[in-house]
Amino acid sequence: MTNQNDDILQTKVNLETAQIPWRDLQRFFAGGRAVFVAPELDLTRVATEMAKDNATQIQHWMSEGQVGPVSDEQAQAWFEADALLWAVVIKPWVMVQEKL
Image (cartoon, rainbow, N blue to C red; front, side, top):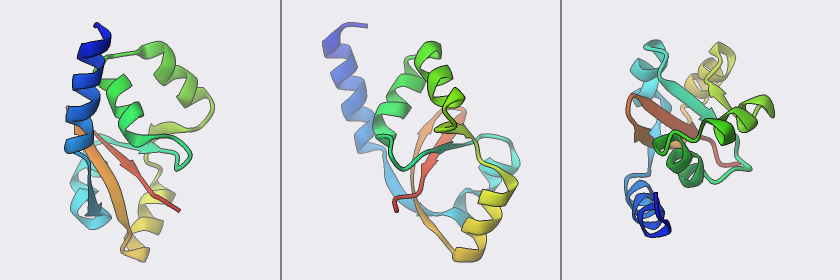
């Protein structure tokens, strides 16, 4: 992709990012499609790299524990707290992030 295409993709992802209650995202978690993004990362950047299938960058974040499947413990904590999370869909994944 060219830089212009990257900019267009980044803008598209940014426009599709919204806050949503965790309770509304549980079906994605149950289907194994909810992906945790650490609060210190830019959700739209991670989602853009996922959309570009940048495996090297995604693997790096995963190895650092900054991106990965939502754990059962995290899902339960968000459910109990009735958490409102930032989310964006990068099919088939739903990227979710808690802003602290």
